[in-house]
Picture (cartoon, rainbow, N blue to C red):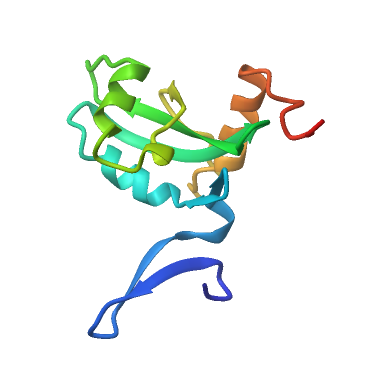
Length: 135
């Protein structure tokens, strides 16, 4: 990790590839999950135009994986179709537990996606406000 918060891997030739950001990492049941890896896989689905993956609170696992998906124009898809597309292709613990179909993402004035707002909206929508408090 660099001081910028970027996560990277170096190949055998000394070139670095950015793999994600530390603050976006999801920790589910002790497993570190990098949203970018899941996003890059989901981008290969022919019906998906854009996707943002982030963690939401979960009492049992600490966090669960959620995907906010923008479909291509005219496309229709179900949550199960997204999960089925992932099963057997990415590790089971990385398959999104929750899928939300959206038409846009909350953005900053400079055009960056605000994942923290997606997370806040999902927590309210799924009534998970108390999930972060372990009893």
